[in-house]
Image (cartoon, rainbow, N blue to C red; front, side, top):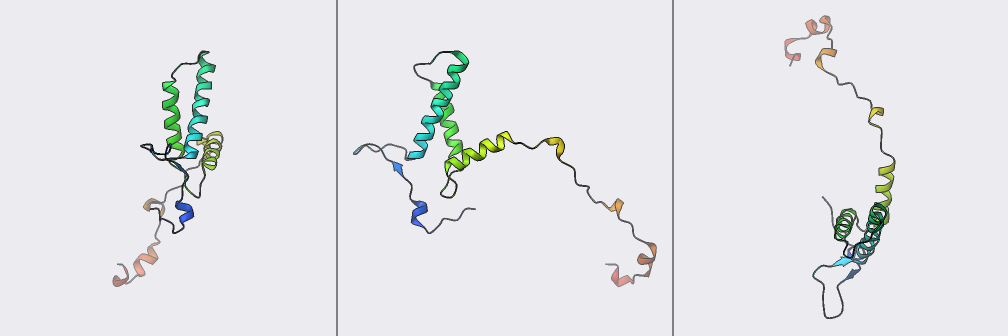
Length: 129
């Protein structure tokens, strides 16, 4: 559960609403436009490297850039900027933990607990509860 802060500074977002007199149907922060443009250029460059040509309308690259931008900005808030989210993503992607390095913690069961007969027999009936 997330609590809303009382600070108006944290709630203030720099939004591009559209040209004067013509408001856009979606309100996106300026950072999302920049991230979308950078991701679109990256995906178009990867497509050019793979195929050697550039399309007139790169629909696949646009959809990939939209999805990637929405995934990145899902984790962005006032305390965690977009650059930190991307840096964390790249760091976690490069340095994953090896599955073989993990050790299983032994589980305790009743088979491993032994009661000495002297302790069980000397207990009074009201203490056996």
